[in-house]
Amino acid sequence: MNKRNLLLIMLIGAALLLAGCTEFDQPISSDSEGFWNEFIVWPLVSAITFFKDLLGTYGFGIIAVTIIIRLVMLPLMIKQTKSSKRMQEIQPELAKLKEKYKSKDAVTQQKYQQEMMAMFQERGVNPMAGCLPVLVQMPVLIGFYHAISRMNSTPEIDLGAFLIFPLAEPSIVLAIIAGLMQFVVLKTGPAMDNPQMKIMMYFMPIMIVGFGIVLPSALTLYWVIGNIISLIQNMFIYRPWEKKEVKEVQQPVKTKAGGARK
Image: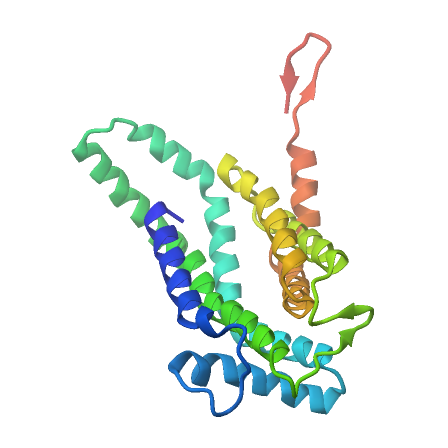
């Protein structure tokens, strides 16, 4: 994901957040007006309430809605992860291509871009595939935050607790669980050879723990369940145990002379 795409995602996220941030501590009902309330927040509140009535608690209602949302987005997520896996597989060829066209003049770089795009098309790799799931999930995640916050501000609604965690209050324990789950998801996903991506693998879990410490446990529960689904998905697509075996087989063996043989 280049800087332009990242900036676009951040701007969209900021716009969505500002769309409802002035009302995040206000009660929510079917009479709440505005596009954000009518098409994002209230439908989420209604779905959570429906499954709460069906399953008995708001905790189970949040879990049910989270599973449904992730199942709806599953084809998109699978497409993204498969594209990421193919991108990982062609990294050696991309490195050779970059070395072939290492000159920085405009003509050489144009040829580099053309051959790289031809390689992507031939291998079925879409560099933009990683951006779309983020764009789709962002309004849902922010909407979930607003739905939980506004349910918590509605006197008629008592979120109650899930296991030992009061859903209306932050929980350090649940935040740490969410952060650890995020780390495991990233660890079992595509290999991160880029130093910036390796930093992200440690930064993302810390960021989630930080948010989980100050946000209601209901939102942290959404992260935990979502990460469990992502972990199952990674197990089927990336097969991390096989990836480890390949690394062990390909590791060079040192000889007594100090050299190495494959």
